Length: 121
Image (cartoon, rainbow, N blue to C red):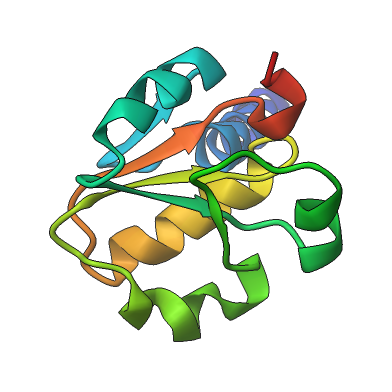
């Protein structure tokens, strides 16, 4: 009985970490360099920074536009569902949440910059 409880607890812990840290289906994790390479296609790709306006003002990269995570669900109508969306935040966690929001709203191609602006060199 004790072994069964330990196995169940271990399974729940593994599930939690997989759910929390692995990309959702249809979301691609890319490096900061891969995001920079996509700048050449800026007419075909939408770049969204989901940090707060204050964080964005202090340090941002063009062509990223600021749509804070808390406003994304309402402002996603400003984005084209048929174009790729590249998401960034400070560390990659908020942008992953944002990417999941867009996927649930029917966006086909969504990428998350792993490591966020902290990985930007």
